[in-house]
Image (cartoon, rainbow, N blue to C red; front, side, top):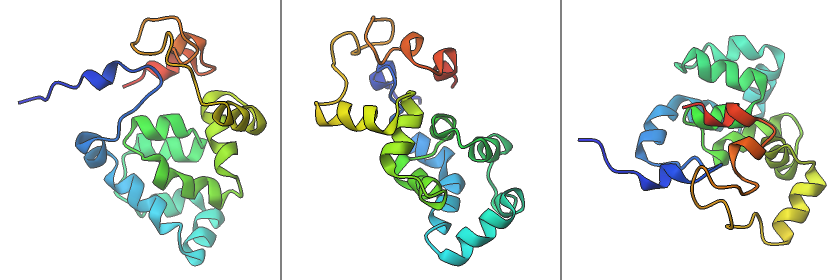
Length: 145
């Protein structure tokens, strides 16, 4: 029996629930492998070959290769684990999060220091707030399942 998930209606938000966890298990395990220096070296030497060692979906592999963290999250990635990809690439968390929102590192940092995005217009999909897909740089891409 499918669970009612009213939180699916929050714009710009992918909730890492049990279903997402199952979907992204191998993607997140790959990310955790990047905690070891020797694995980061292997990955950087031949990204595709390293990814092919993991039973991830082809879509997950393409999302990693594209460094599209929003896409990675839609395929089950959790930002805690995905941060290891950014760290492997020498990026700060602010740079990574900014890339997910279309903001620069400084713009993202400033937004967070000032309390994050407003809830006004962003409580449900279809409102007119700044977190709505039509106001994001990824536009319709943010609507992919």
